[in-house]
Image (cartoon, rainbow, N blue to C red; front, side):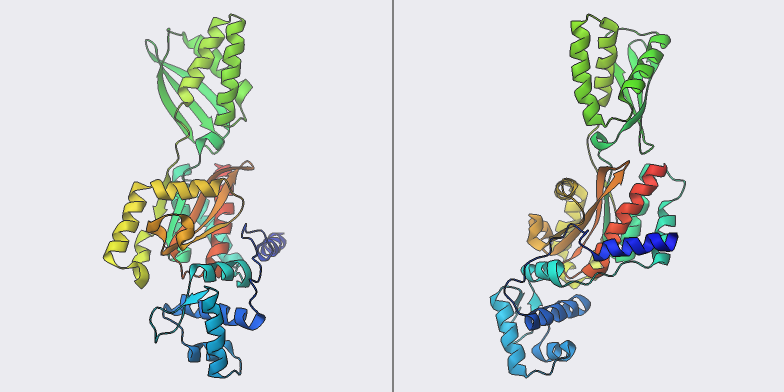
Length: 366
């Protein structure tokens, strides 16, 4: 059964299930596409401009140097490759990488033993935050890049249970237990003092009526219920709903955990001090990374941002590959990797995809 499931997963991987649109051929012939693929694969491996002689040898085609140069000139005219210096070989551009990823790539899914080890690494007895940290470390160790995992968006997580605990006077501790096993605590001030019995009844009422709803939907229904309660002059019910509304304010903030940032220092194109400083500042301040992850949260499947496609100058020498992860069939967060544009897309894309699936399953069991 496990083998059958894994085979089905491989079929999905080899299909069009990555959220990466298969591009048009942009008018370049099959030979030019072959040269572009060979050039990009060579550049990803070595990080050095690829000359015509090297390209002809790697391509395995019996062509004259003049023919190879003509093909390279055509690719350069299309904007798919460029020459860093007049006498040097060619390197891929962002459009070249995009065409490669959308049209030419052959993905390399993880083997079943690798998937099993990854599942074990995420299946420990840790709390949800520990599982997220394990996922970021897993992404980093498998790709040798920087792994990032967004903390689940709380407005997308469903509520399982609501409890109120009296502290002192009008101070009440609100406890929300979510579908991913997280316990959210917030102390609120109520307009009057409630008895323990009233607080217990309030928690039971909210659990019965709101269990299974996400926080965003819960807040919307709370507003409707409060208006209805006011019309019916049910003062106690109005207070109960107001308490729940106060407890959930500002619970939609998102953050992320990250691992393997220092891996980026191993790539010459990112290792300049100014560029590293900008990157690490972006990781610390988080705003740009969070915005990019939030964009991925609104999309379906694996998303790939190459160079300036991210929209941020800090990331113009990087590629970011992301995938959403789900709990109870609802997308609650995004994970991914950040690395140089010459990353091994054929291996990284399946790693990001399967890690997202495994993380969702691990959170669900918690």
